[in-house]
Length: 158
Image (cartoon, rainbow, N blue to C red; front, side, top):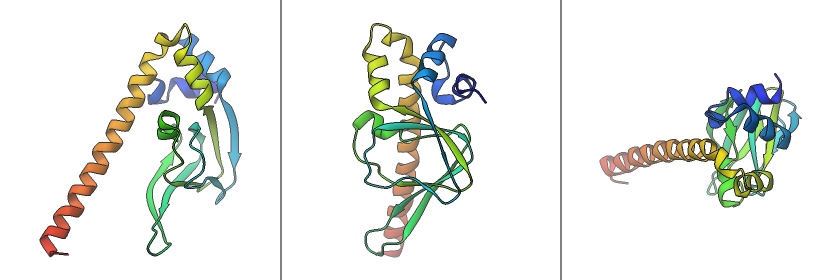
């Protein structure tokens, strides 16, 4: 699928004009990963937003006490990863690994910032709002998990 078409059907880019999608598409790179190949490691620089063009990706964190990995999510075509890093430029909070052969579009934080801060930046407001919604949904899910853990610990008095 051409880059502009993939962006057009990705919820993060909903509401952008064809012109904006074309500009964003021109800023994107593309990388392909084999099955079981690491896309990025927890702790790597968080400087690139990625959109899964095809394939499946596992997101996992290493548990410090045991060193074991804990799977947080499986993401498929159209999903976005690395969105936290393009906002706060903090290191990656998890490791992403291709489950199947996977192609991702890459949008560097520097390119995104240049677009948003430029004279046409207001045209990309839907992207900013969609990114905020995306992060808000993830925060709500995290809050729900934390609540479940607290309830469990309170119930069983750990």
